Length: 340
Image (cartoon, rainbow, N blue to C red; front, side, top):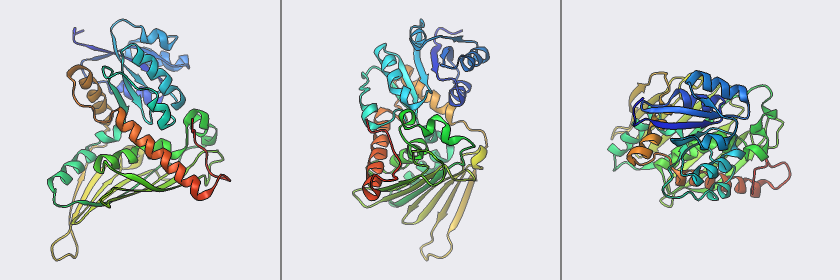
């Protein structure tokens, strides 16, 4: 093994933790993992030839450990990050990074510690191309963006940790909503929440299963979104409308359907637009690209694509959407979220 190998640890060996482990870039080595479920940790240890530790403290004390990937339940994210940051260990934490803006702000990491937020949707090829296409047309400003993102959950969803507000912090808005809020903020960084509306229509749980919101910029550009865990056929759709173009990012691969970027360009005389379409391979490389960005930030001081400030921004939007929804509906029957 090269002396330049970057040693990493994994905390949380469930589906997302395993996906991160599968997508480690060349020049890295997973040397240790931890999960309260020892069977999950042993599976990762066996698959990736690393050590399954019996405690987080033991993992963070491993010689040569440079960074840690944290894929735990939401209530555990900030406490684990605080332990890692105190030891100078760099952090890649899965979204939403905390149960609330206040909780994430309490981390206050030292400047020497890299804190990467797991916004892997930023690394999808359709989003790279979408951003580049918009940059090619600086005289064609964004008028509005709309997003739809949802899944159909599964039997027993109302009994999972995501439906327990003390563990999750909130419902669908905090789960998939942070992704589209983050993507929209990449394109319109100065968005402010205008209104939100959150409901529980189906799952017998205290948190929201459907959430809507409208945000806008001081210049008048608008973002509207709907996220859902009653989207019985999984769907992802992000549409950007400019003065002369309509950009459609559809699908994420796998159960969300083929990933596509469709561009409709209006002619000066209006009428039917000219349309181009690009379909991307079904393999999802976003996890690998994001892991690489994390490692490069550690070793090469490369700027992070999705940092601590971005996590705070998204959670700030989430908090204001919940507050707006509560003001509209009142306490009775309103979904709960973690306010501490």
